[in-house]
Image 1 (tube, one colour):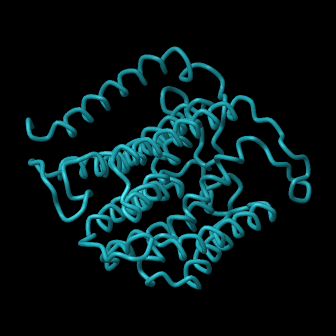
Image 2 (cartoon, one colour):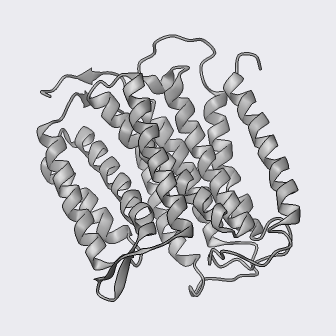
Image 3 (cartoon, one colour):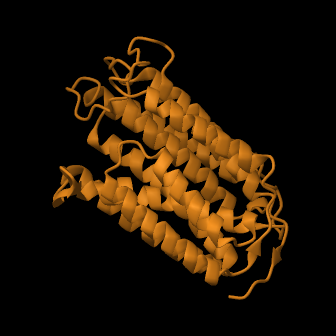
Length: 327
């Protein structure tokens, strides 16, 4: 265990968080009225864990993070790519996976506003990592520059999202039809979707050999088909942003990243696409919703996206070398 300090520290922190959850929960959300119902079908229970199935399924993300940390090399030194080294990049990826699990556990377990904020900040932490990691590889950022950009942007995002959770001001009335633009939409609709779209652009650029047509069309297709109930104006603005970012990365490509897409990227992507369909079945009011069932579609969403996180990690480890392109 002495050679796996990251794993040991994570186990200790998880244990501390579990104890704090039980201690604080016993005198607050376990006995108080529901503050923020998640509306993901499962019937609300009494006690420390309000949605048992939806909550415990988040252990998938935590297990994935621990597996990544356990498999870190025991020696320091340069490898084929940073994700194969005993360094900060795989640790941050693993931390992001566990952050998703802890945050979503807090949301479904407590049904509180702060739990919802933890859920969203965890998702934003994780989904932003591939974008900034790819940029750091493409444009040869130093570790210090990566850390500065990643954490400054994340901290600002987390503060904005937490503030919006308690002060969700209306920014523009009737922004898209009768739907208003609210402060929480900046992080939970636009920034979340933007990170996903940019990640798609980056991987499409690598796989297609910097084909602008593919770099524009794939994120637009994903935005239109995978969005659930998004306002029309949001779709339009995101599509315009994706087209602009794809064009910028096409003409300023940096160095080409060589990774093996088959099978890990395709398995991870397949898990996510199936999970996106499953997510729609696990909402309150959906025809497939059965609040009293031990099988919950939203729990299946957690399992499938947890698997996608693992296979995306495997994909990142396949990078072998880079071919210089004009910057």
